[in-house]
Image (cartoon, rainbow, N blue to C red):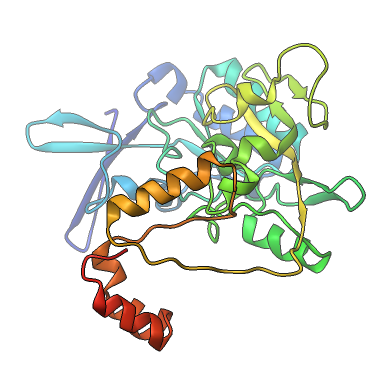
Length: 320
């Protein structure tokens, strides 16, 4: 049978995987498991179904069914990974990719897990990069930092702050994402208006290709000749290779931050004001426009504005 069913406490879950649907590979499961264990150590190869299921939370009831296959009328089977592995070095990633290439098994890179592009759509191997979490170098002269792809951005930011620097890249997933996810999903943040999206911050990368070979791009802001290979891999979502290391720009912490607010009569006026600001290259760190509903909310009126501003809000219905 190419799928398995588990029943516990009235919960019934059926699942399959890449290897279960291919008898010639399923026969080699122990062989592949042994080979993976030799690369990363037995403790860093996950085969327990309950643990593998944690990588597929978006397919569970109440989640988004990213990948299911029908086996009978009214019955669905979740497609799960066959293995999850935890490499600790770029070299180990290379060996895992070579092994997967040898057996023709798909690989899905995984780090923080906050995005939707991290579920193995056909099963195979989840390559969990969270043990590649080292800060390799902080260059305070060149204003760069070199890190491994599995580091949580919140942890990196804390270390940079201790040195008087900031990354200045704050997507909504900032507290639960890793650098590798930022690279793979071509992330933008709340301060990208001034500092640019992630592709403007990347200077160099190490990427393991599908055949296990390594590309190590120069850690420089620009090239005199030839294509910029960084842009080939930024936003690839793990489809062209596995990013294991990246060098990024960093910025000195500002000595002062100033916040200004402007009250506009309606939403159209707000959009027009923001258009003119951007087209004049005034380049604020962040500009945010709140519609009339949010502007007149209790949060704004009683927690975010001063009494004089509150009076103006109340005298201008529909303002932004």
